[in-house]
Image (tube, rainbow, N blue to C red; front, side):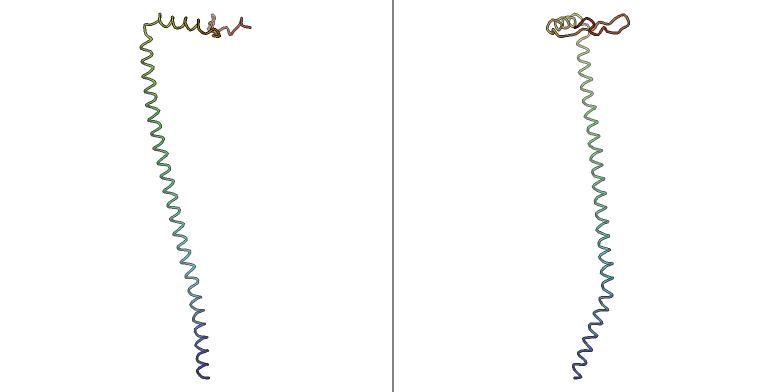
Length: 127
């Protein structure tokens, strides 16, 4: 009987100690999990910021390259205009020939003739 009394006291003591350990461990565990969650959120925010920075960098590089391409296109157009303008200088007879030839081949063409005030007569006699 003495042995069973000691055993039951030991069991009660073990349960009390277990409850005390739980009362101490549960708050510690909550703090630990909150700390891990905070670190995870911090890392996620850090990655999101790095992604945003890289996207902005890519947009900047894209804009720079597009601007450079536009400058190159403009240089090509300017060069082509210079070539055309140079070939047209002093060729009034050829230009007049092209104009007359164009008039003969296009029957639906409307020619606007400026008046004294510099304003064209807009299809006045057309019906």
